[in-house]
Length: 307
Image (cartoon, rainbow, N blue to C red; front, top):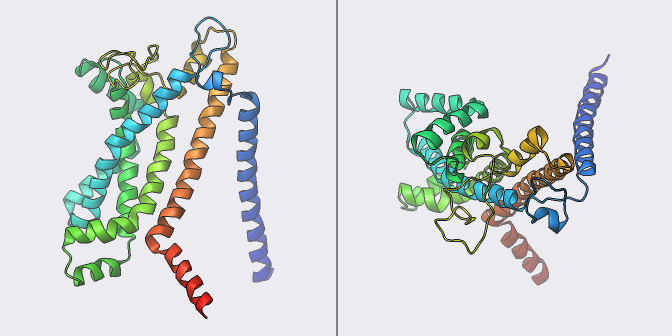
């Protein structure tokens, strides 16, 4: 068999594997969407759940999921970005940095159920808060920190050295170089990593079962800030969409529990898909903005018109 024939065979194998993966993904999407048909109806997306009658919605659970996402990102992004900057720009390679990387790798390998049990001990029992949205956000931040830190560090290290050297040569300080030159060049990768991690937060379940709870109060926007009925109160139980799906499938007593779970799964899947698409779009737009691609095309167009 010639080298060209071997190349064609392996190329065909790789194409077949890629097609199989895409086909499996499309089949999964089709099954979930077909079983959860009608998930886009406003009365389902924004309606209140029912414990005894059919036709309940997922309004509070959807609000809890998005609010949990926002609070978790507010906690994890600054910590991860700071850790990434330290590891990429300021830390000297040695035992301390090696120990930090070992700790990050150990945290990244922790099962979510273990983190949930730790959150139950630390953020539910020891603090005396009980099941709270803040406890769930703190627990899932532990899961997100290693991956986001690695993404931030890699994005900063991938910035070409001539950008840093040019900034320093012009008299900028190290901090000015980091803020004005390095971070803008690294933002597309960082934003992509943040949005992809948002999809994981939105789809997490085990951690929230032990920290945010299995119930949620009836939310009212006119409630007092200290009331558990206020949607913005972080010290209230917050059953997320994934926990709601698990509870419906395990102990749901409403007549249409399976249908509500299927619709909720479709909503969850579409949300994660939108997070991934948003990551690709944000990365493309930010890369074009910071690389001056739009201005460069405009300049070429003006020169061609002048010619």
